[in-house]
Length: 165
Image (cartoon, rainbow, N blue to C red; front, side, top):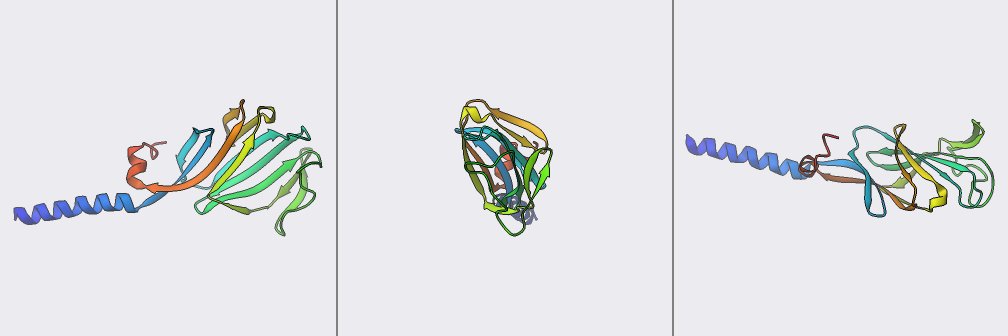
């Protein structure tokens, strides 16, 4: 009887540990110059807004991204003037341009960007990042900004305390 109890106990422990390593959960990580600015599990679609001043035109730019379980998407791009590096028209057949509060707005872009996006900002860009309408950081020094969607084992997420965030 003790042998069966021991066997089933070990089997339950083995299954629990194995599933903890095999079950992977999506984690969103935003970092700049090696400093982690944001790290949380992706529980639902996440909206990320990046606001900055264009380096050449010196006008405001707003980029709206969505993070879904299968990757990052560019959803909207808002700008105030036409010039160096700024759109002249829609970038795909789904997108259209409308006017929103004095901005040109390319909406419905839905451009899949993969699982990682890198963007370089200088201090003059005055870049800020909002997640679900909450400002998480203003990059006063600029730097290489990295958005990443990755998958980690459930046990790693538990041990690192990511599930309680």
